[in-house]
Image 1 (cartoon, rainbow, N blue to C red):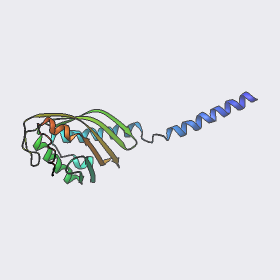
Image 2 (cartoon, rainbow, N blue to C red):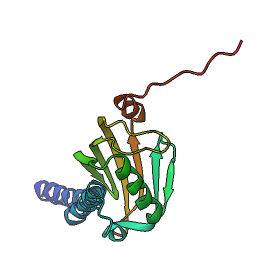
Image 3 (cartoon, helix red, strand yellow):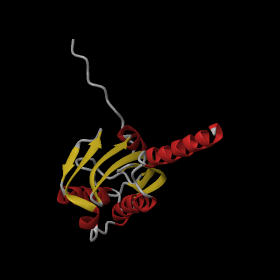
Image 4 (tube, rainbow, N blue to C red):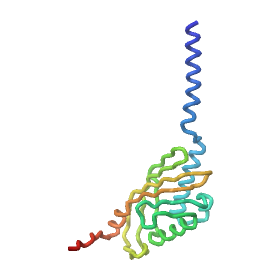
Length: 174
């Protein structure tokens, strides 16, 4: 009799644990693949400059935080695609190559490598014709099957150093 009760108890515990553990990660394998595919497609837009599918990938009111960059926030797909054209003018051969992608719920974190040759102006800075290679991290928030928010972390100090620019400290006033 005790064996029967213990077996029933263990079966109920395993059944309950299955439900609890199933709710830890609500993203199904299919939607995980969709999120990864969505971010990879967005990188292809940046790598090719072909913006034809941008409206299918990004929400109209997307916010992009360019951490540690001059224009630190972009709002909307128009501003985002304007920034893409600006970067592709400076680096016509630019590529964002994903090194590792991690999915947690509706957030996709992409460790990637940016490469490009500075053939055009970058704002007030003249082209240097030098190549850059730098690691970057992109954190993409997916909402209703679209990218709704992104944070791009890239070491701009390393980019400018590779381009040959130097940092001049301010003069000390006496």
